[in-house]
Length: 199
Image (tube, rainbow, N blue to C red; front, side, top):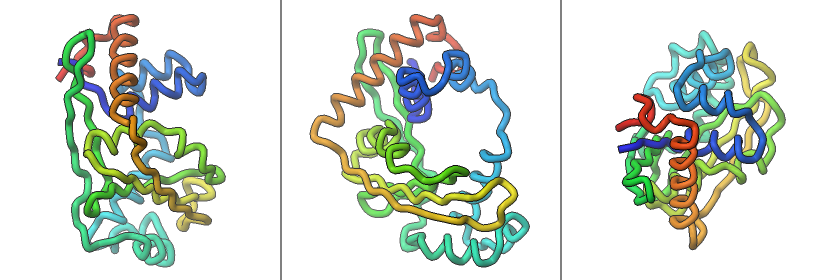
């Protein structure tokens, strides 16, 4: 069975919208990349926010940053990094779509985002990720907590924003169409049997 992640679908959408190249998309699908400084810092920031003890992260973030960022979190729900799969029928057969939620609070998913450029609403509203998560996790709402850093050396964020997105009525149909089109793309470029796309 072919497996697809929310990240795969979002990369495919960006390729369709001419935001990334074909080579970049294929490298992403086959995981042919090394984490860069931005990705590493973002991972550390996630870990700090999800940790019971943030003290070890003072090496990477100031105390003011740690305190302010954690004050935006809702720690009544310790459900972090939750993975869910949902199966979709396509003309190519069944496809497994995976979502990995940063946090689940009741019937809402919270995603933590870091950026190194000015926060723009369209960057997040246009994304397929929240639509996929609404469908895969069968929740009505996804909230993005976005933290803007000046650069990867900055020990504190300079700005933050919070965006809430709600599943439209036709969401399952739209997500199913993206899954089907992405699967067709895998066959078109001969990646349907690659280990990275097989469950």
